[in-house]
Structure formats: C-alpha cells, structure tokens
Length: 370
Ligand SMILES: *Cc1c(COP(=O)(O)O)cnc(C)c1O
Image (cartoon, rainbow, N blue to C red; front, side):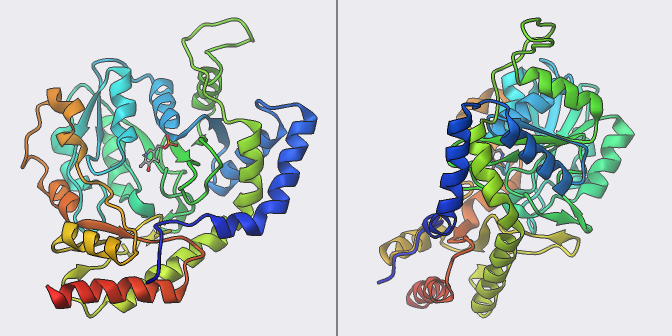
C-alpha cells in the first residue's frame, strides 16, 4: 500500500535547506527582526509580480482582509458581498468589523462567486465586494469590476489561494482596490509560520494600511487611528525570499499534475474533474473534483493510504456563528451542493506520477466495487 499525503513539504525543504539556513542566519546575526530589509524586498518583489505599486507585509492573510476593509473605511452596519463557499476568514474579516457579510451563490463550474447574482443583493448599505479566487482559479473579474464601478463599491480580492493565477492574461492581485495574499505554510507560497501581504495600486490606501499595521502610529508614538500589531516578520520574509523565485516553476508543475489527474479520470462517469475557464490560468492550489458518495469515497481512500480533504464541508451562510444573519438551508443551493460533492486530491509540486496513478486506481476501485 502507498501512503499519499495531501501535501508534502519535506522534499522542497531538503532542496532549499542550505539557502534557508543562510538566510535565517543573516537575520539573526543582524539582530533586525521586525520590518527590515527582508520584508522590504518581499514587498517590492510581490508588488512587481502582481503589477501593482505597493506591497505591505502583514501578520497573516486574515489580517490582510481585515486591514483592507478598515483602510477602505468599512464600518459597523455596512454590508460586504462575498461568497459562502470559501475559508472562514473571508467572511470573518467582515464580521469582525461589525459589518454584515452578504452571501452570493457560486457558479457551479468554477466554485467562484456568480457575478450574475450580485446586483440583486446590493442595497444602500453595500460598500464592498470580496471575490475569492478559490482553489487557485481567478473569479470572473470583469463583470464584478463593472458592477463595483456602477454602484461605487470597493473590491478586495481574496487571493490567499491564488498567487500566480491569471485572469485574461493578467495576474490576480491587480484587479481590486486591494488584494490579499496568505503565506500560511500550506499555501502555494508558504512561510514556516503565519504571514500575509496586501497589494494595492492606490497610494492613499497603501499609506493607511502601513499605519494600521503598526498600531495606527504615525509618526512613531503618535496615534490618529486605532490600528493593530500586524506585521510580517523578518524570519518569515527571509524564508519567503528564498522560495519566491521558484513559485512559477511550482505552479507549472501543479498544472502538469492537474492535467494528468484529469486525463486519468476522464473515463470515470462518477467524477467531475475541475473546470478551467478559458480566461483563466489556474494554479491549482487545490485539485478539486465533484463526486457521488463523497464521504464513502473519502473513507475508502483513507483506508487505502490516500489522504484527501473537503474544502469546505459547511458553507459560511450555514455556520452556527452566522445564525443571526438569518440564512436557511436552500438559500444558496449551489454552494450547499458543492459542500456535499467537493473532494480535493493530493496536490503539490513534488507529487509523482506513480502516486497520482495509485490515487486514481483507488478511486476507480471504489466505484467499480460499489
Ligand atoms: C488561507 C486563507 C485565508 C486566510 O489566510 P491566513 O494566512 O491563514 O490567515 C483567507 N482566505 C482564503 C480563501 C484562504 O484560503
């Protein structure tokens, strides 16, 4: 029996170990741990990569969302439109301000927010839209930006899963007023702890964000706004600076593995393989299929040594913490259906062909037996 994890970071680490040790040693001997040259370099490189003017390192991707909303002036009582089929932080960042997440159902093909359903949810309280580029595939940005323009709304891209993804040939991160990246260890560009970044083309927003991440302090020890301690630290930035030059090659490998999975699964009628929109350069943070009898399949694969994950088993409008928003089952049917059918298979750049063949052989075995 083979044992195949969802994600294996060990091979990557072995490959980069010496460079990482050197980079960390340099930080430690410099004794400069907070907002130093490593953070500056990463901010500059990620901004350039995203074709925007500013990168601002923050403590994690969740803070990137929260601070973006604050910088855009979102206040208690405001409404922010987003998808319910995402990681909790997308809506958590809205609720933490005291603003109200307003959920719009997804396009079942891409799992991303369905732009055609957004306008019906806009009220005089709506201030912003947070599209999520889920699993590494860009949301359909053109109609979203058009609606935002028409109704004078901010757009904050949740690009936590999508660094390097493209929409109509342009990198995600350059479409919204701000965009948010996460460098959580399991993301495509992962630190060895928590880290995140906001990118923006807007000089004023960039300035506000830089102030908010240091307690609202400007100049130092003078406070005009209430901020946070939310910084990307030098050790994490040093590690990310070693890894970043490899990102595009890793994305290409993920795409190659995705194509191979899709080829191997093509004759299996019980499985719907990921849809790649023609406008999209998908970087496969996750390779997510839709299947019948999902939970039984997952249990079978686990017995056979194959780890899989369900992103996400309960859409956000059905989460107990959001009960007071008043949604009920059936309100957002495509998200609810996706939550019952989605299954993410092992995916990382170092994944081997034999491992993929084993995963697919076990999926076939399950359906032929049942
Ligand atoms: C990971 C993730 C976040 C949060 O990032 P953290 O760095 O873990 O705080 C937000 N949104 C989405 C879609 C994510 O996948």
